[in-house]
Length: 455
Image (cartoon, rainbow, N blue to C red):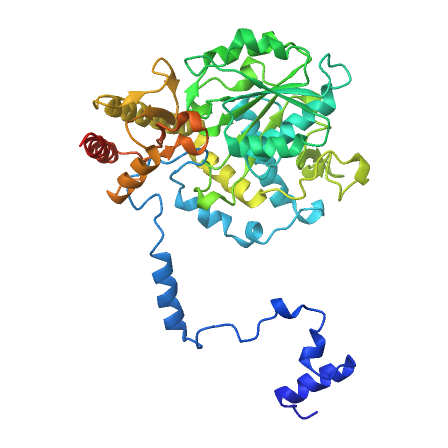
């Protein structure tokens, strides 16, 4: 058939629909919201012109590696070995979908199983899934999982307790999960040192679950948490959110009674990436395995008694009857999680310990340098910190951070954006890449800001 001109094709399509004009086609759209003129799009560009404009737009962004950075607040600047990206972009990983057919997916399934094994060893719990969306969905799913396991025997039915220092973005996800479900959400207080009030935490005895973080959102390492399980009892789930890197140095929660451990896996395998994609970790005791969310890869043997791997104990509504599903997590971040596994395997146990020590050392060096400045006060001075700590400085902290940014330093996170009561505070985040020159630059701009405020 001869090619019809554009208007001819348009008329032909309208005729098939029994219409006479484009206006008639869109007649059900109110006049007030119709566009009368064409979109103000630029003229066609060559590839060179498009690339030039794209570079101009990208150049307006400031990434965390372009200047000294002390911004953390949940996501960490880190160094990811080049080998991770090289391996992750191999077709076997990059193009893989859910490995439903185990007979053709053994490589992918084994890699997922290895990730689970590493997470289990890291937190010292026997079971791990193949990741969640992030730390916030991990925490919320852990709480609802605990409700399903403990509610029948709980004295405080449908009740969970959460640390008051859980950051607002995570609390928001937890609240979204529990609203409308009849779950009673209660808060646990912290003392003047930023530590959980362990004696007051005994109020959670007999509830379904308690959720705390180690370190907490102020970077505080709380030794008192190691006594929390005995306060809340065996029939209350102790859920602990962790900084995954810290476990190279501090005692894993599985050693002090944690039933479920969750956290952000992002420091292993991938940078902050503007908030995503990232992945969350989720590990637990055997009591929770049939109620835990996400995918689990199991190790078994095939008909020839050779080692084999397969998805097992699926909890997703796509796999089983909808009313029996325990989670609406419809996917996970498997590729990103495998990048984490690659990173951890390249480091090895000793390398993870060295990495944790580097982060701890940079945290202490930065804290010492800042607190030597007149006018800077350390919030919770009697506490130990990992990765983050809080300082108080004169003046408006949002303006202070903006001023320091204009001086070439990303100085941290103004805590007033989270809690109005901390509007004079800045959360300082450190990492393995924090150098002495970075710290010197931060000290210099803090001094400039204080001088600016005083004058």
